[in-house]
Length: 179
Length: 341
Image (cartoon, rainbow over the protein chains, first blue to last red):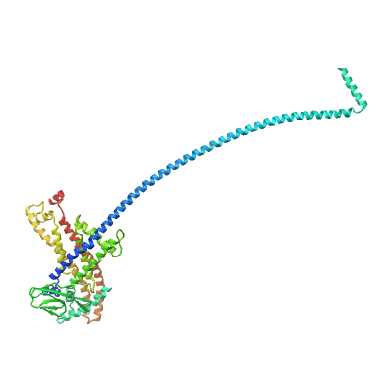
């Protein structure tokens, strides 16, 4: 401890003492410090500070822009949704209309088909009736002719002998006489 | 590790040197001259104490004018004598020593390092404009932004931009010098920020910058404190005028004492090896000393790295705050009310 104090107290004798400022070093320090402030200020700190400020400004601007874009995007999306909803409604309406039209067409067609078929049926019935009547007349004729033929053949067979002819005539006469 | 090994390498030779001058009186090892030699300025730059790089001397005296020569121990040039890293004038007359000493050399080196770093970083901002920082730029940027946002802006206030070069130079110059001082080998090891002349100049510049920018409110508060009785005004004026001086003096002493103390602690711990080992005579003692000194030195060295940053930060911070105080304008009612307390 004593030696340390002695060193401190003997400072005056030592040009590089601990607590006596050395004027030469002080002058150098001043020169170097001031020049350093000027050089670093001009070529280092000021450009860096400007660049940093620009970048910070740029980032702030970009963020603001992004926020704005997001808001616009949201607006656009909601608009899109509206449009979509509108389109959906329209589609539904069109579909409903189309369905209705189809339904109507179907019923119309059906009705038309029914009337047509009815008409056709009635025509067919009438035709059948006519045909039937014609057939009946024909049958009657045919049956009459057949009966005549049969009667003729029966009569011919019955009256092929002399006696039979005579007997028949007699009979006819007898009957006629009665009338 | 490198730091420790270098420190250990450094000291034996230093010890021999110290013994040469002090040993005859007692057999006990005296570490003080070694320590004082290491924290003082010198005309030689020791490299691990193995050899010393001689530095140029520039001397002026009224009788012989300017003398320049390269330092060499024992050399005598026109009335100057080189002795143990210092220069004496044989007739004892005053002379101005403007030599490139160890500290001046280190200051020039630090200035060069800073100029190279900051011009290249400024260039990187131009090349990399609008992009994320990279390389050296991304090392400097956080420090720069920290000093700007946490020191200059809150300390100085809205007019901080004009003081940026000054505050930034304080911080980075002190920081680089502190860190260079922690390096045990050339080109580090010079105790510039622990030199009273250097811190005095920083304090003088701070004093000038603070008071040149003083507003009328600032001077009014110093010489004629508003809102107090006249005897109190006179009393406060005396205190405030003293305060003008004590602020920079506190800056000067704080940096000087902290950095010198750090160097002394590290050197003292290393000296333990030689104190325990009785200057190399006792091997077990040397071993014990090393066992104690190495972990402690490692610990203190880590703390010193922290201190290097903290002291640079504190100097910049306090300078900013003092400038901010000097810049303060009176603000109406608030100030009047403050005065009436």
